[in-house]
Image (cartoon, rainbow, N blue to C red; front, top):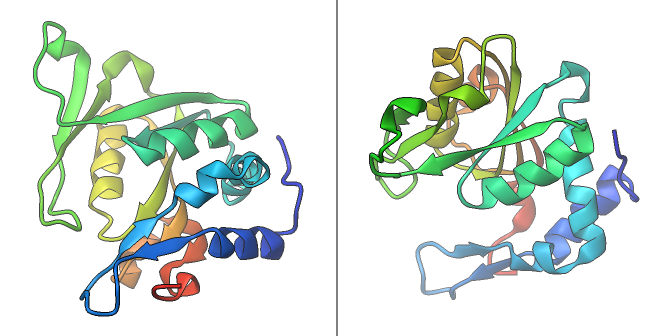
Length: 191
């Protein structure tokens, strides 16, 4: 497993420093801008190992990451763990190979949408130990849906590693379980 080049505190400080809220004080909500994280090559190199370290004791055999930024941070984490990666796709219509896909529809997400998630059936199998990785968890809708897909596969669900925990229902942290590098409150408001 790869290790980060900086301490957890230094990594957290760098993530906070390169984060921005988009909007102004008249907005009820702001939009999170994570693009500064991707631009810094040293920070980008540390993200995967830091997320992997959150579940280092769990020995995952595969990492799942939902479109879109879960794919980015998930591949970084899978590489750090030395395991494979599976992209969890959103709202892909039925194709010629629709029987080869495992699909589920989510409960309402942070925008009150129901999203269909899925992956090819042959990529996650019984015996796999699955870690989901994403950039931000707010309602837990995506994670709960992916957890259901993993259970449908007969694989073992380990949990969720995320950059930012914005969960309002604390029971989700236990039920998923969820581990993060930052909490939303660490990011202030309109920095």
